[in-house]
Length: 310
Image (cartoon, rainbow, N blue to C red; front, side, top):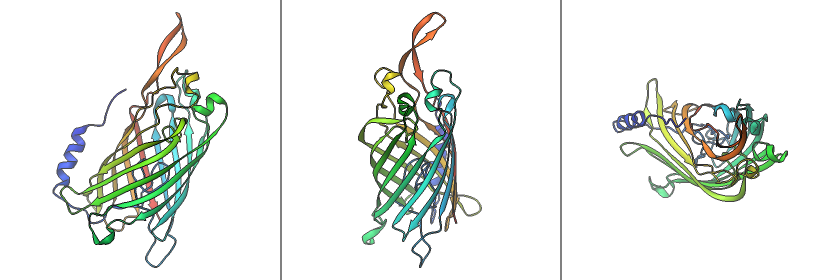
């Protein structure tokens, strides 16, 4: 239930990274919600347009996340368009298949939601002639038709969203080479809306680090880890879990494979830690009513992602 990806694997990749460099590992990879970025967190990059063109060819992405027997499975399909290497916007359909927990899976018995996103580069990486200038971007996410958890309890659907700033730097002239991303968002969604509506609109941090390594057949292999702070409490959840539950920080560990030069595709595979025991509730048992733990069984999540730019 509380397994974590092996730190030995990532330590070994870190050692190998110190011996190599990668010329260009910025693929048009899309996050779970369709923005350019890591598996779950956006970066300060956008979908690139070809030289002499304003609009990019679209980037498409597919993600599958096995979130456990309580929450079920999440599948997303995304399309994102770039403008002048400064702006991107897109749409994601997030689909859901039900879990089989007899007590709590009913909170997620809904087909999914819609996700709209946009992002603009405020400061381009390496601006002002400095190799140490990070890229800075600001963006938004709007989720509609979110019926999970909060909506299930209240028998309604919610609209929630994020407003964020991301700061990203790819440093290929150091050993080991690094891609570092840090950001802040104001959000009223719990676990990207999968966990329902937060009780208020508040600020949360996110970030991650990746190590670009040269792989075979002109590929780049990027082991990475990321985090997203979650709002502590979920709207309406106090009706099921006294106190409204306690949602921990979401963590993800992934390996990305992409092209080393002029990247067009990326493949992600990884694991995540989402929510385990979030509180207690009273349930009927053969011996009568009893206080039992509420465990979402999502501390050992598996996911894959594919992105391609036409």
